[in-house]
Image (cartoon, rainbow, N blue to C red; front, side, top):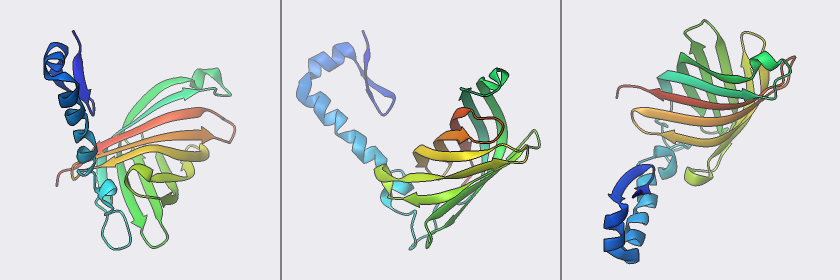
Length: 174
């Protein structure tokens, strides 16, 4: 039998869930919004009145799933280790990431952000040292003291025109 899940974590088995009843399950599900309070962006610290914890150097991976590429051999999954230097301009509401991959490739993501927490959105331009260029829009951004997760939709617009489902997953020591 399956498990009841909140935020991707198994909480109780299906048998125990039946025993607890619908009211108890609803109470557990109500905890999920409280988990968002652990996200500094959801608390609104990513703004003009504070130093955003997203800023600084992060180390991790750049994972991509490319599709619809002009050159079919460029379709598929890719991943590389990289350092991500993140900066913000809280007055102008600009977020930027400079990526330095272990392969020597460098990429820059830059653009305005709007909203906070669940309504946070970021979009802009993407360019790399190998000539790739395009636009991006965020699906989700999650920041804690030690982890960064950014899910982007990227569309290349030069000689290669792939659609890229990109995940940046990184960490740092406090």
